[in-house]
Amino acid sequence: MTYDNNNIFAKILRGEIPCEKIYEDEYVLSFHDITPRKKIHVLVIPKGKYINLDDFNQKASNDEIVGLSKGISIVAKKLGISSEKGKGYRTLSNISEHGGQEVPHLHFHLFGGEKVGKMVE
Ligand code: AMP
Image 1 (cartoon, rainbow, N blue to C red):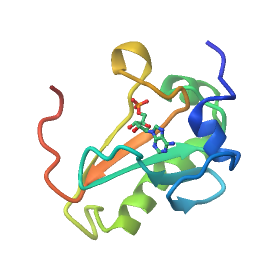
Image 2 (cartoon, rainbow, N blue to C red):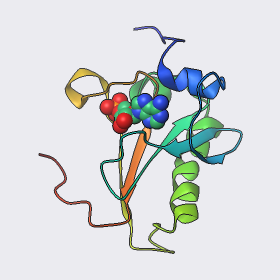
Image 3 (cartoon, rainbow, N blue to C red):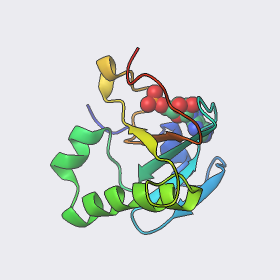
């Protein structure tokens, strides 16, 4: 599978469509999910063109991998849901067909602000 430059998150990264931005640095962009499933539901995406976590771990540099991992914690802290500042959250990345991935640009969901509930249905 090749990366689709026209996926919605690629367009957000290029500034072609808006997002409700929470945080941005050299490695990541974070914004609110357009259809929140919990009180707090945000996304953290790498700036590089990676389809999913497997693609990312195969092709990304170590700096990008660390940047994304740390980016998740930075965003959680900023939102007051980190284990240090708040009551915690769930992070989730859907990978390909069985994972239920809809947007083919790697993203981590962060759910919080309330009890998140069962791990899987
Ligand atoms: P996934 O099923 O893991 O690929 O999740 C894709 C997520 O992207 C869903 O939770 C959507 O609600 C969210 N989404 C789709 N379009 C946008 C958008 N323009 N801005 C913010 N979130 C979006």
